[in-house]
Length: 67
Image (cartoon, rainbow, N blue to C red):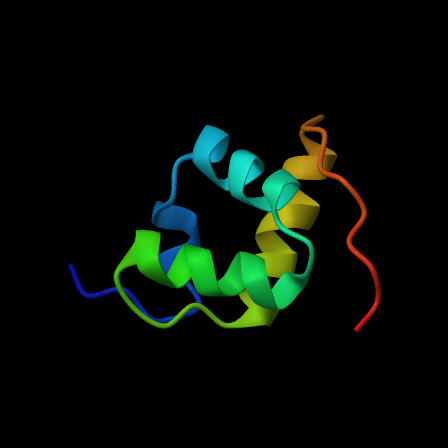
């Protein structure tokens, strides 16, 4: 199945995404690493949507500094 770039972020395992998020110092760094893991473009808006969903589900994600 072909995934759109906005959907690729959902292919990354939850634990892996949480680890990447908490080890990064910016949203750009998170998106860059997730591009590698997902094997293609991952827009920042989709990373933010996934992060919001994970927080809603109770996962601990650190606050990233504003741009």
